[in-house]
Length: 462
Ligand code: SAH
Ligand code: SF4
Ligand code: F3S
Image (cartoon, rainbow, N blue to C red; front, side, top):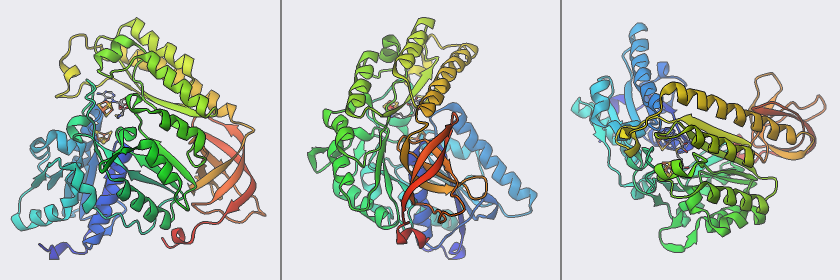
C-alpha cells in the first residue's frame, strides 16, 4: 500500500520512559525515513507526531494525554491542520482502545512489539479514514523487520538485546506492556553492534528490561556474560556498558567480566527497590536484601572502583517505618554513586494495586524526601571522591557555554571540559584524557591533560 499524499511527510518522534523506548523511537524514525519521511524538529513542523510512551508510573501516562491535547490546541491556535498522532509504546499496550476513547485526536495506537508495522498502519489510516490499532505481542519477530542501518551513530549508542519480563514484581506493568522475556540472537546483536561501530559509535550500551537474562535463543550455553565478551572483542569498540540487570540473573561470569574486560566500564545499575525482606517478599522480588548486598560486594571485589547505581520504591503497600529504615540502612551501607528513587504508584492490573495497607501520600512523600537527601549526599560524596583522578572522557555533545564540551567518565559522570586556546577543537566521539578538577552533585569539571584520538571518519558524515 502506498501513501502518495504524504510521501514527503515530516515526522517528529518523541520518547518517554526507559532507554529501550529511546532505542525504539530511533528505529521508528528510521523506519518512517525509509518510507520517504523527513525528520521534523518539533511537533509544530510535523505532519506525523509519534509519542513513544511509558506506563511505569501514574504521571507518565497522564503526560501523554496532555501532550496530545497540547499538539491539537497548538495546531488549532496556529490555524494549521493537526498532524497525524501516533501513540506508541507502553501506554498504547496497556490502555489499548482506551487511548482512542480518551483522545479522539489519536490516529494510530501501536504497541512496543508491533511498531515495525507503523508505515502500514499510517497508510491504512489514510485509506480507511479511521484510527488504527495494533497491539500484537509477537516480540521475537520485531527485530528482524526493523532497519538497523545506523547511517550515523552517536558516540554512545544503545543496542537492545533483550526485551520483556517474566518476573512479575507485584508493582510493575512491564510484563504486561512488553510481554514475555525475549532475547535477540547473538548473531543479530553482533551484526548490529558492528554496524553501529562502523557508523561512528565508540561506546555501546546493551539494553534490556532484564538485560542479564539474555541467552542466545539458538544456543543456551551462550549467556549474557558470553555476549559481553563477544561484543567487547569487536574491533573499534572502546567502551561497553549495559542496563538494567536483575539481581536474580547475575552469574559468576557476569561479575568476572568486570575484572576481565577492559572495555567494560566500572558502572553497575542493579535495582533493589527496598532494603526490607518483608517488602521484597510482598513485591515478589524473590531475593533477600542480604543477597543483594553480597552481590554488590562481589562486583566490587572484581572491580574495586565500580560505581554502583540502583532503583528504589518507597511507600509500597504495607511498608512500615521499620521497613523504610531498613532501606535507609542498606543505602548507608552500600554508598551509591547514583540512584533513582520513586514513590510507589499503584498501576491498574498489577497485584499490588488493590492491596490493603496503601501508604498515604504524605508519608510516601516524607520517606522519599529522606531517601533522596541521603542518595544525593552519596552521589556528591562519590563525585568528590573522584576529584584528582585522571581518566578518559568520551565526548558526546557541546556544553551550554561556548567552547565547552560534555563527555562521560568511565563512572558515567557527565564531565564538562573546555579546550584551551592552544588545543585542537573537540568533536563528538573524541576520547580525551582529563584530570577531574571539581565536583557537583550532577556533573564534574575536568581539565584536558592528554592525547586524544580522532573522531572516526564515519561519524563526520552525519
Ligand atoms: N527491570 C528492572 C526495572 C524496570 S522499571 C528491574 O527489575 O530492576 C524501572 C524502575 O521503575 C523500577 O526499578 C522501579 O524502581 C520503578 N517502578 C516500577 N514500577 C513502579 C511503580 N508501580 N511505582 C513506582 N516505581 C515503579
Ligand atoms: Fe518490572 Fe520486576 Fe520485571 Fe523489573 S523485574 S521489569 S521491576 S516486573
Ligand atoms: Fe516505561 Fe515501558 Fe520502559 S513502561 S520504563 S517505557 S518498558
